[in-house]
Amino acid sequence: MRQRPDAPLVLGIETSCDDTSVAVVRDGSVELGLAGQTQIEPHARHGGIVPEAASRIHIEVIDAVLDSALTQAGVELRDIDAVAVTYGPGLPGSLLVGVEFAQALAMGLDLPIVPVNHLEGHFAAPWLRAEPSPEYPIVALIVSGGHTELIHSPAPGGYRLVGRTRDDAAGEAFDKIGRLLGLPFPGGPAIEEAARRVDSTPYYLPRAWIRGTRDFSFSGLKTAVLRLFEDRLGPAEAHRILGAAGSGAPRPGNPSFVADVSLAFELSVVDVLVAKTVDAAKRHSAASIIVTGGVSANRRLRQAMGDAAPVPVHVPEWRHCGDNAAMIAVAGAWGLARGQIAKAPVEIEPSLRLA
Ligand code: KG4
Ligand code: ZN
Image 1: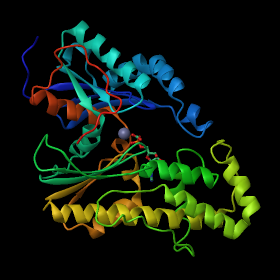
Image 2: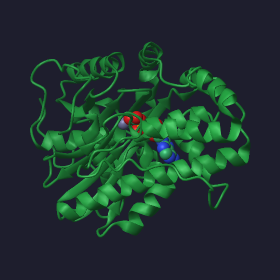
Image 3: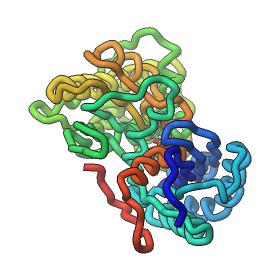
Image 4: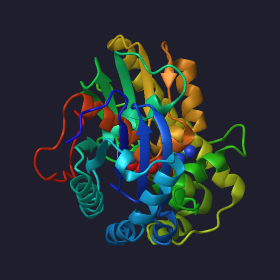
């Protein structure tokens, strides 16, 4: 095996959910190439991700995605120093495709393979920005379709769980409410867009503070939104909508009602996310806050966190908020530096945790 260079060129591979993504990153911070194919279209018809379809599509497209990342980066496979791949958490079938692909490449090229925790990847995403990197100790809010976790990282590579969702992830709540409102999947960007059409809303949705803990809960919001439907539409129509919810069939809603509910929902979610993160940052004397994951693309969340935080807030570039292989390559470079090279075939860990 080759000697480890000072500024390694890491090939990142991410297939944990519905994005097939490959990236080339130099020195754990400079993205040379990032290619990906997201599967929103095939899953949108079902209003959510279909695991069997996801892994089949990963298999179909991964070769082309690799070629495209290498071409963008202007490098060849023989220039790569290490392969980093997400081994969990995620959908088992999807994870397997990436891990098998990465192992075949690493073996063929005699390269070290670094198994990466997807959540450490999200944590690492802000390091891809040109600006100064986050300073430790860090409190990180990882908010995506599958996760809502508040993490305290006192020093590089160390992660402690501060709080997590007890039911739905924040992004999942966006997706569910989006479906109720008849908006396209994924709900997050659609709700954000709808909410931007109004400056204020007559509705107020509850905040699940779960006092005394830094845990989150978002499942009650769906019931609260349905109650708004009942008040406005009457129980029969609300139940018709409830019955259809999950069928994936978007129902055209009254645009101003949809905008009002979207804003009320966004305000409720953002309020709790910001308050708990800022509280944790103070308690752990954090030098910086990270907000990352698909939901960190939300402008209202970014703005509110920036306004309330006592320390600098670091968010990824837009393209690095959701699942992507560049962040996996950054965490892979960290793993490489820590000597976390797989000695045996990499096993997937669908329920892997960061802390
Ligand atoms: O990180 P990600 O791409 O995939 C997971 O690992 O889950 O996150 C996807 C989630 C979806 O639930 C989507 O609705 C949400 O992120 N999302 C947003 C926004 N963009 C994506 N939520 C709120 N506002 C957005 N702008
Ligand atoms: Zn993710």
